Image (cartoon, rainbow, N blue to C red; front, side, top):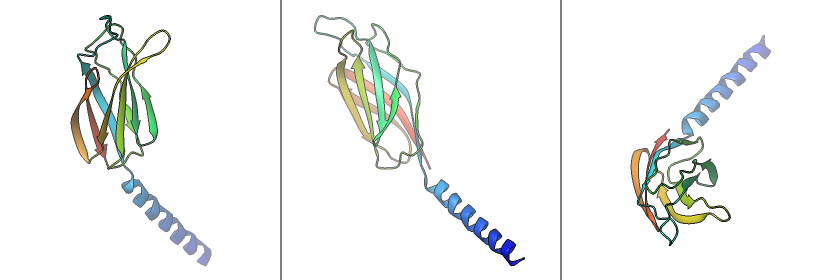
Length: 135
């Protein structure tokens, strides 16, 4: 009987620790990505833009590219289950080419609690995004 009582206490302790770990974790969702006035090459060609997304050191992936579009909107959402307040969100905008993709600019923002709309002025246009941090 004492063995079962001890097991119940251990189980209760494990559940309490797990619930504390769960409430201490944070998740970031990046969404609503769109850009304006992106420029392609010096010859006046429209870019084929796409975006790569990181939170802290975690790479979340990249959007699809849009052919010949200087004002694209992307439907992709990126979820970072272990991104926390004060981690850095990094978004790179690229122009897809046959040989080497061209870097159009990088956006950095520090994660804060809540939902935020961010505007980034790039080397070649502007990037807009929303993110939310849920704890």
